Image (cartoon, rainbow, N blue to C red; front, top):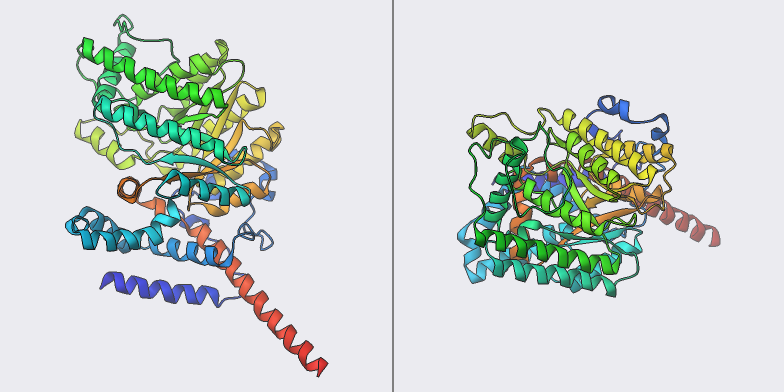
Amino acid sequence: MEIARASSNLLRRLARSLNTSASPPIINLSEKLDHPSIQNQSNTTTSSSSTLLNFYDNDERPFSTVSNPRLLRSLLNLELVAIDPVVDFGMWVMKSRMVESPVLKDLVLGVIKHTFYEHFCAGESVEEASSTLRRLWDDGLRGILDYGLEDAVDNEACDRNLDEFLKTVESSKLLPPCSVSYACAKITAICPIALLNRVSDLLRWEHKDPQFNLPWKMDTLPLLSNSSPFYHTLNRPDPLTSQEEQDLQQAQQRLMTLSQKCFDMNLPLLIDAEYTSVQPAIDYLTYSAMVRFNRDNNPIVFGTIQAYLKDARERIVMATEAAEKNGIAVGLKLVRGAYLSSETKLASSLGFTSPIHGTIEKTHSCYNDCASFMLEKVAKGSAAVLLATHNLESGRAAASKAQALGIGKENQRLQFAQLKGMAEGLSFGLRNAGFQVSKYLPYGPIEKVMPYLLRRAEENRGLLSASTLDRQLMRRELARRIKAAVLEGEVDKIRTSINH
């Protein structure tokens, strides 16, 4: 009953919005969960930023190139996922036994595929994802193909996952040149998760005790700062067994194989971040690959920094400056972070404060500080950064900072990215301003990809509802088109009456 009422309200709200004039009320940016007031970020936005991404201006039309059917379908999907009961119901269905029944499973997955899945995902196969990417390319956007793989538990699964990553990279050869901006991989898919936990424990203990010997450790960059969370490792861990060392070598070789493939194709490789429990091991493997491949001022391997972590600013400075000293072209993707709920619960259960900033404003401030720091390195020519954000003010501040630093918009070392189906207004606005913009394109069978998306939605309840700006810009564009169609019809009537 609650779902039915919500759906009815959605249709009434949509009808009202389309019946308004082409000039809607001022957009209420404060409705976005990850969007502070402009005053909270005014210190990071230069005076010229008011002319960038100015969606208050009715002449700004980020969706002007989107077709009517696609625009309407996108608006309907975003209106639906902004309703909490709809998201709750979707989670309940995907977790229930309904999907175990062949008949109900086909019905449920069929509905999901033609609504939310098509909006947020690129397709079930690399061929379908490639077709989606070509459409983005036609719209002036680039793509990051992200195959939906689960965490691996053994070497056999790791080898299978590596093959899938390599196939995805190879598929980019068949796409328009430059349409694929990055390859994407998860260390948790090519190294058993239990081993990542063990290696992370050992790396944390080494930071506390520099005399602690890790004979298997390769050259890398700084991984931890004194403000990093260490509560995962309260006792001195046992050394890796010979089998664990062998498994670690295999994981390193998988990453080197993938990195070599990307190096040969000159296609940058993004390595995703995960939970703090395994992040030290992920950074260790990622930075070791950077040391090997990011030479000759050519950043190929990119790590990820999560700005919602209190130690993010320290770690980004330490890693970047160490890379500069050693002639390594560091590449980093900057995100806010996706595991707020679970990270906070784990720290609390162990009697420690959360490793995450206490307020969303502090997270925004950290993100903008890190972005500003990396943009200065880009301007200097020593680093590359992918700014992955759905936050309008962060996008505006970064674009303004790039202009102030004289970073050319064709400079491949500065790029922006958003998830497919999210922050479309920001993506098109940055594109219209001349910047390099990509969309993350998760793809794979629905059964594999939807659990991943549902986990992200559950972890970050505001992510799907934080589409206020997109929805209002889409309504404005649709209202403008309806008004134009009505006026054109009236003109035709006048011409007809004159001719008669």
